[in-house]
Length: 637
Image 1 (tube, rainbow, N blue to C red):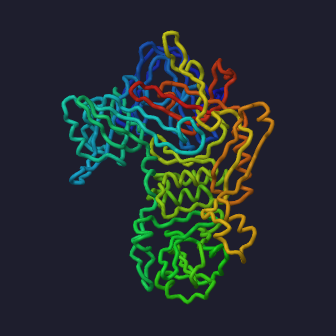
Image 2: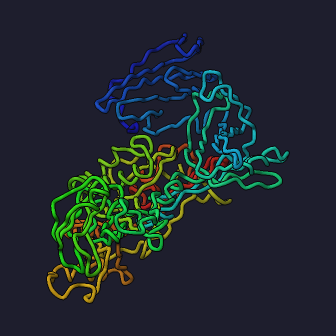
Image 3: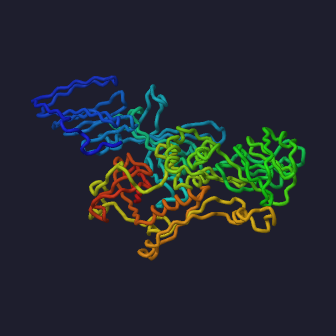
């Protein structure tokens, strides 16, 4: 939550006329001070509300007074001339500061005395494999014995604490591919002492950027600005440049690391590892949700055993030979040896669901296909639930690396069933998650602290996190021009309203020709399905095309299963893209942008570009320059 104008109740302020004011404060933090000043009126207010927020507000008016207070709550602040501030914590999980105008103030982005930066870089030695963390700072800094890390010296090496860009999708776009955020940190290396960094591997290891107040730099009061990873360190005669990446870089690697051994060379072997000439070294297949028709891997072609999902499946249905539906025997086995030894009648098949395998009762006449299912019911096969399974498969921890609440939120906005199949060709975790989430217009993006967020992109709505006016925008050039630009979007059509949306759904993972299908015992419905890769749902508005002569037709690829769900999503996307949308880039001081993250909604209200009454925008991109203290926001709405 944020403080709102008018949030203070009438009569909540109490005034007291006085010629002098004396206050003495002692606290559990060990701070003790006394204050004496001349004043005329002192205000104090206490507010609690049904939002769970509780804060105390104090005003002190004086010509020379400056007060510093730190307390057991970890807050550190500065009081000064005619200053009005409030600290708030509440059950909504928000912790910050605010003023009586409803503006959020984040400390220590711009504290009195300035801001210092700390950088912590994990690595391993390339030769010995010994782990090491490097610690750097902008100013002399050592942690205390009670800190973690304890008694740690930070080398004064930071020249540029970070220049960093990231976006919801690819820069300037609102769907499709997801780009890894990137940037750099520059360290001073005039003496060559950092040349040793060349001996360490940094790629994929943890990186943290923190700020501390220069006036009183204490580690427990440090604010974490960024959590991510690195690519490598580039060295020059004068500097070391750390190429930083957000955590999406961790996802940009193979999801399936279990490969076929290629050792199944004859019948009677109690294994299903493929032959050396066809499957050796290839990833074992994975099933998520309910893909419609896939080609299973011939894991043991001698004994007619096929793999449809090596992590196990909940069902294997619609096993077909040349499109002819085979009969399930009803038997399920727990081991390869039991499945291989089973007696299965001709024209039937048996399963080993926990292993993702099935076996035919007789040699096939042509292409074998099936429809595996991963997920006990439709509620377990939503885009959110399947993205969760993929992240767990990749080794990430729920509510540490990603949030269960995000999965619940996605299910609330779209609980449609999805089906995705990873065959024996390598796919990255990022690609699989992106495609599954993209089925409902959602994406995965790490927040600035490195926690993966799963969010659906939609038109900006609700109460904005922040309102930006002309006074908030930085100026450029000698004439004091405001740092704002209106740009075309990076989407198809460049933001021109679209008159038609075509949405692909229910993918056929094994496209066949009529010659691939048996001439008999194949229904007309399946024959029609098997010969096309996608089904398509269409939503259109001809009136848009009449008004906009270059109005585009947008095409989206999804892995939704049902026609109804696909049509509903097509209608939603048409509503999203068939109206005028604008994109602005604005630059503000970083402390103002601190409450924002990708996907946040803000209000932009300036006396230009038709924004005089204010409009809501979604933050689709953020570029932060920690050295200048400026942040550029890419806005869409």
